[in-house]
Amino acid sequence: MELINKIFSITPAYKLEIIQDVFEFQLKSNKIYGEWFKLVGKQAQHLLTDIPFLPISFFKTHAITTTTFEPEVIFESSGTTTTINSKHLVKYRQVYETSFLSTFYQFYGEPQNWCVIGLLPAYLERKHSSLVDMVNRLIQKSGHPDSGFYLYEYPQLYSTLQRLEASGQPVLLIGVTFALLDFAEQFSLPLKHTIIMETGGMKGRRNEITREALHQQLKTAFGVNAIHAEYGMTELLSQAYSSGNGRFYCPPWMQVLVRSEDDPFEVRTSGEGILNIIDLANLYSCSFIATDDVGKVYTDGSFEVNGRLDNSDIRGCSLLVT
Image (cartoon, rainbow, N blue to C red; front, side):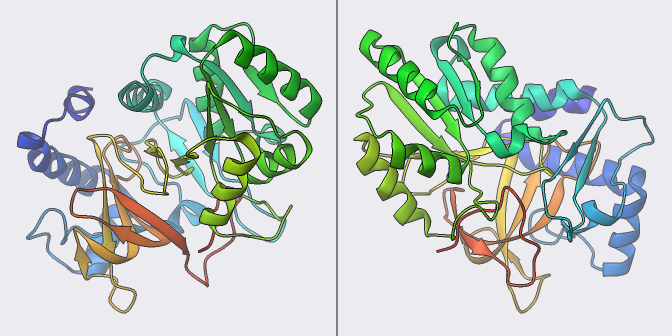
């Protein structure tokens, strides 16, 4: 656990050193990643751009573990009857909780300051969702009597938001895209003390629309200046957040890079292409993930997501197209 403690207390001065430690640990103790490294045949001369990134699809077909263990929790992606779901075997649940709570503190402060409402009907209808696990813990940490989950009880949610707004209570409404749109069309109301955070995902309930169009529709319905967003997935134990305009920022132990669509081993620290993610919280799975998300990485480390590769599976938490 010494390396975990270093990860969550990481500073820029020691970031490359810790990435090196994690890389060597996983190369030695992760059978699948070790085999991938040999198959790729590329030496990691530069820690960020030369490290081989494991294709995210491996989480669908292999048990991705660093060391041998019985997982305390298994997170599973959503999907359709024709797709294979990803599975993330988590050695220590506490690592996931430390990651998302520390990130939440960084961007939004103490959960106790919020009434946390989860509008995640599709995710609540299935088991093993990392998003539900995270929001459930935030609800518990909030301690507010109105914090909780909603399925399709839109009238009740409307009434609750009216009451909370009247009292000036800060509210964080975390919702899947299709449910937020359904609610906005039926019960628009001005929100002055509520942050709306979308997590992506139409799940076949609606036609895909651009993130810009989605945010404009929600801003109009609720009279807010910005729509926040969360970027996360089953295969990661960390999240990035956007406070508007679709530009995401990472916690210190997470970094997003970009690879060329023509050459998957051409990796850069900024620019446009397909996103590679270093998530050091994934210490006991794999911290170096080649995603199927297309986007842009800025020189300050923030990033945008513009869609998904054409040949990648549509997933329940898939992001909006542009």
